[in-house]
Image (cartoon, rainbow over all chains, first blue to last red; front, side, top):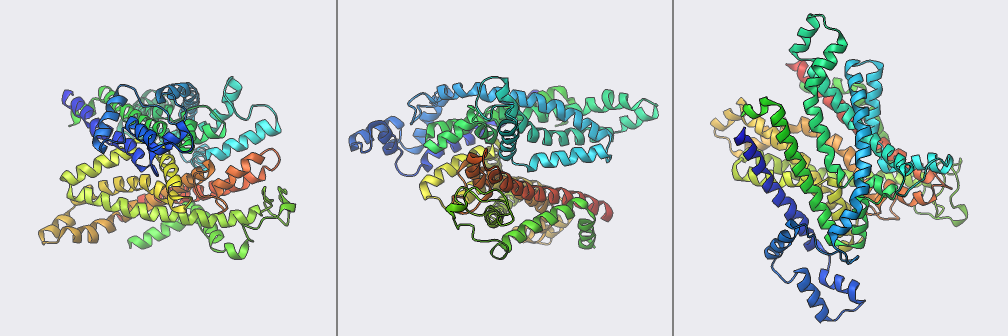
Length: 311
Length: 283
């Protein structure tokens, strides 16, 4: 167990290194001279070469790549992502301002999607190949095929333009939350429903279910007390993996509804060429994914002894 | 035997037939665009924002262009870009994955870590960051989109290919060939890659759906294929400003995005089913 834990924890470091290197290198893909670009924003159209050099030193661009990377990394580890080029504010402050909106959207969508995915998935598996199963299948295929930005606009057209029931965009009360959550849940739920269905079907095909049936237990008892309990481990793993959406939720949904979250911050920053923000967001989304993955794996090993003694 | 059983399966499977039908329909739209549609660039200021009618099946846009023609030509844009992306990603991904799986050791470690890194960063986040950079750097070329999507897209191919090769490596026929003195590249090209084709085709089909979704999403954000080239996502981006007065500008392009993605998803799922069954029959 200890060996497994140590090995699994050590595994994340190469990936974390890769993610940090990749997001840092984005700066070096910048077209033209970043120092000149920043100097222009700060000091007007034609900054003197002296000012450009000063900015270059401040950005660390006068250093060799690896030393610059190392400096950047030490700052990042202290939570300092630098200063936004266009806003002049610390990147971490900009991110913290947007995080609550992203979190609010994510958790509401998550709660609703999980509830529905569980219900639909279980019904689908129990009534396999019946009408309701086919319906669920079509529903989830549509969920992954319909672009969320389009669905969002259609919902705006129906509920805001035609019926005047809900606001089309913005952030605030619960009425602002309904349409974005509805839009995102549709695709979020679709994939999860399929997963619940296949996990439960897998569990229902096990020997202990045959035994339970032979004992004459009622279907409800078999499904809920035996099969579902065993199916829950992969299901919970899978659900918790989607926590990484918490950071950069659904970019498309945020953009459609002008939701002030981190997804729309990313798009805005790309348009403004605000590189420190883009770098930070790419880095954070990668790191969060790696760490959530690690936590899930470790929990999994604690819950399920087959894994920790397996190797 | 295998091929015949497989072919029969494809046409008996409802999902496959339906998916294939949709894909053929969209492909025909793209191919026959010059015949079945008018000029997608022709503006007509006296016919701005006209609702759907017999003359303009899907109405006209803010510049008086025929939405039907733009959608038909858009099929060509989307399919060409998506195909290019898929072919490049497939080649790069399969090669790297096969090399990693076959040679193992330090090669596998390096490629494996690169794959892990790319899997960790959400695809769209990275696509948006890259396409933003390329747009400024290299102007509004279609290759920006292709390059930005390929950078993240090859990973899924590499991952699948690597695990296929790992499992094939231990099979008897490969061990035999080795004992007979066959070279590494010979085995890779002659045995491993043909055996991996099935799963890769399923992956490529499902992946085409994802790629189309990514292209449209980038188009919608204004970072994808640039106007005036007709592209569905970008058409919605322009159309959304007129959603109160001209909802057809948003409605029709989205319908075709959904339809194309659905087509590839249906076919991919169907193929998965058929392959499972073919295997069962042959064994």
